[in-house]
Image (cartoon, rainbow, N blue to C red; front, side, top):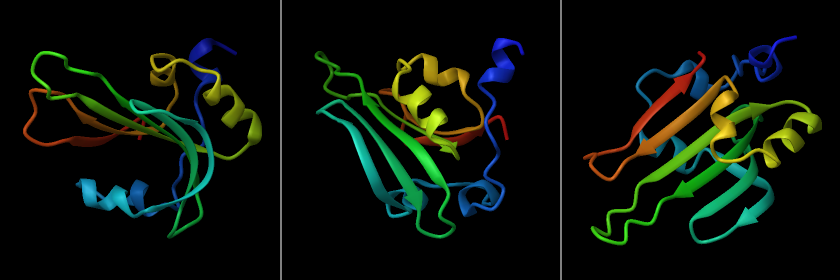
Length: 124
């Protein structure tokens, strides 16, 4: 098994977030129940969340870069569908940058120069 295959997870085909085109921030805000919190800091949080509609579990990471000059802090949310505890453990032990190797994943990127966040699936 090569490295790319090792990080390919099951697609959440039953989930509304997978099925819906043109996702907006409001689609994500109230979509989840928190099951477990792994990290809870000012600029980084990691949790296991469950979709209220279908019950799909997601590893959820919020990461914020501090912009000391402009004060417009870039913010990133990564949601990775999980089915097994071994996947959750692997994600918990991955760096912010290593999470980009897992697919599929739902991203909400809000860089400092953007007017609004961009929400998109990687590996759909």
